[in-house]
Image (cartoon, rainbow, N blue to C red; front, side, top):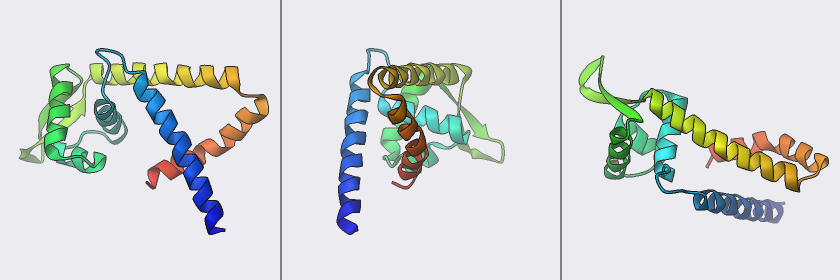
Amino acid sequence: MRSQVDELAARLYGGMGLTARRLRQLHAPGDLTLPERAVLARLDRGGPATAAELARAEQITPQAMGTTLGGLEERGFVERRADPHDGRRIILSLTRSGREVLRHKRDARVRQFAKALSEHFTPAELEALRTVAPLIERLAEHL
């Protein structure tokens, strides 16, 4: 049983890795970087957070997070505010522009996925993917 799990893990890792590489290749000039997209998505899902919380969640150094946040703030996608409960802390949140750019990027990627699915998969394969999608999401949450 263990070797079957190892084989499955290797195949999933390879497939997900290829998917991630292909998505990175779609990067266009002026587009968001992977860390920028991750921060915007995290703020969208989890709400306002400190830079330290974001750095821990994304498993990057506070310095790297500061650089990422600086670029996002400069472009008007995030804003800084004093924490209403502790004026020494700075809380970051998405701006309307940040939400809009995130939605636009998600929509574009979803359209690319939908195009590939509709052109290269049978109805039975689509149903199998529909069944396994929640499992892949759960796997990603536990990595």
